[in-house]
Structure formats: structure tokens, C-alpha cells
Image (cartoon, rainbow, N blue to C red):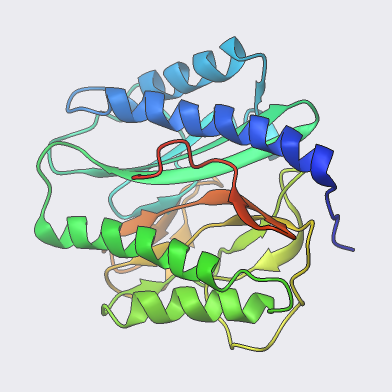
Length: 253
């Protein structure tokens, strides 16, 4: 069953989304060579709690931190550590959630550390663009497959690959709700989209193969061929007036 949200619930989700998006902006301000991923996690947690919210990820299924922070060929779910120090040329994926007034926001960005390769910059840009390709297909009466197909097409025309093992999802009272939202698919197939759906759309894109694997820590996911990976995510609400992107605080990012 897919939980649909009314206008007051979507308003609450907009507040949770704003806090989530602001936490990512705090992280972006501090991403630099020499900072540890644990320091970034602390800054994110402090901002979320200062706003009267709770980090969605902290303790979720045993996750030990407030943000997932993944570097280079790490795709998602990287565990922050004082031993993981950002270096010039890295790309760092930061995934954040905030729980506020009974609802979650969920959002992720990929951030370059200093000067990075042109290929890395293109990967980041294509991953972001693919999210907005998906949003263009997010219309009442369309289907989930329309969203996934749009994302997949945007990515593959640039020669990159979409991770298939991990996908987007519904979000609201729970961090993960129905429906599943793959970043690939066939147009015209899947669950029909309707007003009140709130979704985390999150393309994960690799320069090389789509194949990934999980490390022994039980969380960190890496590309099998060690190619770079990027991640871009926002929480969106589908309403009768159109799409509201609740976590998009800086519309240029």
C-alpha cells in the first residue's frame, strides 16, 4: 500500500526537506582537502539537531552516523570516520536525512574536492541532470516506469551506467515507504502516479559498469570495476498543482 499525503502533511514534509537541504549546504561549505568524513558528519548532525529535528539515518538498522559519506568509487552508505580524510581531486557523496514533525526529508549530493578531472565533473553533472529528467516524467497519470526510463535514457546517452541494485523509494512517516522507484525501466509500465505521492528519487551513476558490491562493514557499497560513481537525490511531492521538490534549498545545486 502506498501512503498518500494530504496538503498539511506535505507542508510538514517541506519543513523536514528544508532542514535536510540546509544540512547539505552546511556540508558543502566545509568540504575541502584535509577534513575527515567524521567532521562533516558532526557538522551535519549539529545543524539538524539545532533545527529541532533528528538525523534520520542515525541508528537506522544500526547505522552508526548521521550521514552516509562515500568517496570516489564508493557508491552509497559510506560510514564517516576520523581516518577518512578528503584529498584534492576526490568526489564525495553526502546523503542526509532529517526527521521533523513526524516526517522525513532525504537528499544527497556529489561534491568535488578542489580541482577534479573533467570526467568526474561530467559524471556529477549528468547524474544531477538525470534526476531532473526523471522529475519531468513525474506527472499524475504517468507511471513509475516513465520516471525510471527518463533517468536511464539521460545517463546512458552520455555513456555512463545506472546502478540497478539500489533504487529510490517512497518517503514520509517512514524513511523507506512504497513504492520502489528504480532509476531504470520501461515507459508506460509500473505503478500509476497520483497526487499525494512523496518519493525519494535518487540516481546513482557509474562511469564504468553498473555492477557494485558491499564491503564487509555491511554498509559501504563500491563499484566492482573501481570506476567513479556519483549520487544525486531529492525528496519530491506530487500534487494536483505539480511537483514540489522539498529538499531543493539551493535551486542551482
